[in-house]
Image (cartoon, rainbow, N blue to C red; front, top):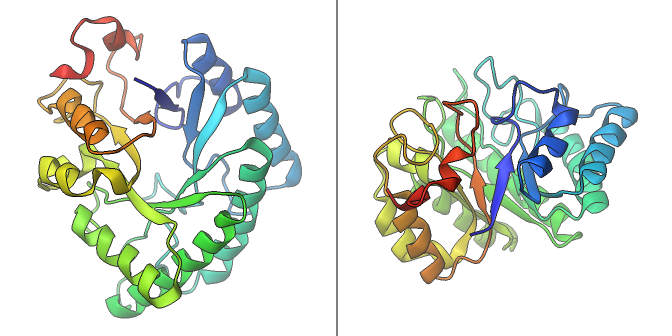
Length: 267
C-alpha cells in the first residue's frame, strides 16, 4: 500500500514548514497539502520556503489544492465563485509553478459554495470554464485537476460522485479538456450517503485520487465503521493505481499507529 500524508489536517501541532520533515520521520515518502498560504498569490519568498521544505525533507509532493478562500471561515473553493474569477486564475499560475518545481501532478480544485443571490446555473457555467482553464494549465506539466464531493457544508453543491462527474463531463464536452478527474474521498462520499461500493465498481479506473478517513468522526481507519480496506482493495482491483491520501483527524498521539495493527484498514 502506498500512502501520502495530508499534512494540512495531520501534524497540525507543527508549523507548516516543519511538517514535510515530520512526514518523512514517520516513515512516509509522500505528502499532500491543502493550499498552504493565506493568499491566492503569496510572496515569492513564501513559495520558495515551502518548496525548500518539501525538497529538504526528501518527500514527494503528490498533491496540492488550489486556493480555496477562508477555509476556517467556511469557504470551500473559488471555482464557482462569481466575482473572484481573476483571483482563481492568478492562483492557477502559482499552483502550476509549484507543481513544475516539485514534480507534482495532482491538483485539487474545491468547487465553492452556492452564493446567496447568485444563479446556480451561472455558478456552474463559471466552474466549468475555470476547471477547463485549470486543466489546460496543469496539462502543460503533465498534471490533472481533481474535483471532490465534500460533506459538512450544506452550501457546497457537489455531494456525490455523480454530482462531480456531471461537471467533469461538461468540461470534456464543452471545452475538450479531459484531465479533470474525480477525487474519491471515501469519508465524504459515505457521510453524504453515496453508495461508495457502487461508485468504486463503476468508476475506480477513472479516479484521479483516493483519500480516506473513517466515519463517524473523520478519525483514523479503525475508529469508525467504514470498510475502508475493502473499498481500497476493490478500487485497486478495478484499475486504480494511485496512492491513498491519509486525510483524517488524529485521535491519538501517534496518528499513524493504526498502520502497525494487523488489520489496519480492513475494518
